[in-house]
Length: 439
Figure (cartoon, rainbow, N blue to C red):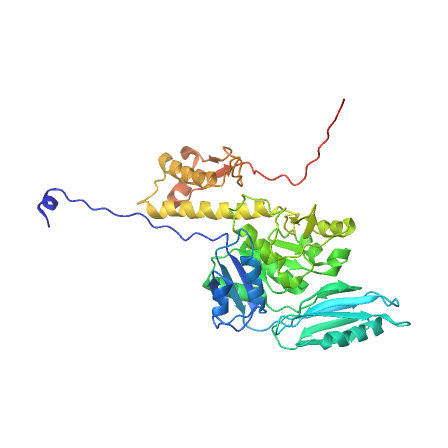
């Protein structure tokens, strides 16, 4: 002990404990593979995945490539591993037997990623069943693909379990995915126990059974589920994927129609928006790198939008996402921003309680809580240059009067009746302009 210590003793404690902050910019890519044994790994690039043995035709790699290709994009992704191979299955349906018409489709070889274009010119006097039988032989000849026809339908499955077959470039046929329930929701629950620092959920199946399960799970666990679909039924107004989720008022699932399933439009869109501050952008009008836009008729667009299915379309030469909504119809930026604000308020108030010797149940203690909440809200306020979730200077916190709090609540050290308010900034998605010109 120094002489100074004998005269003046100073002890400093660092009250710097901070709770972990939930990540609202990290996507989870859940797919079947055998590249590692753990339930998940975190990657900052596809090069890291290649080092772990992934190939460019692995679904997890395709999903990560879709994420990291965006500008802006996320710093990292969590790659999950399904413990067993889903029974991937898709159905091609022939739509014409007219002589001279050509049926076309491009199939990706599941074990090499090679694109194999198929074409069949319909001869005279054939039925839809005969067309399906003939085209099924072409599909069956693709390496790594099994196929079976029945009437006008061709069921397509992988010859090697765990590798979905991607089919695109369709002409005179339609496509649906009918992969059976593979318990993605069960694996999500197990993975969440080990690592919950992710917010966006994506999977490698878009079948109604698997989408319904994951949609229900994300609704319960306050995540956002992004899934791309190339269902011909959704485009024609006969699909049930979007309408079923809309009927359930599911505001945590985002569907996007994109014609090429292997490009993983849902993953690309999630990564593009996840890279930015929650609530600071509209998810409409975004260009997705590596995703093919499609031309839609007004009828097709109306069918999609009636079921709150987003789409990726070329408008005036620019490829953009539309409409930027969840299956319920809520705008994605509102759902994303509110979730992040809720988490930050919880974390900051908890940090206040944990880092204080105590927050007194007095007027001054209530002021501390109020200022903490207000500071969290103001972090989400925007400016003209940098829009936010909340309009600038509209955040307000209303605390109960200390004299009005019951003695039982005080005795239980329970603060209730705290309220806050603010104005959502929203975004302009449509403009109606009327002008007059005169001489």
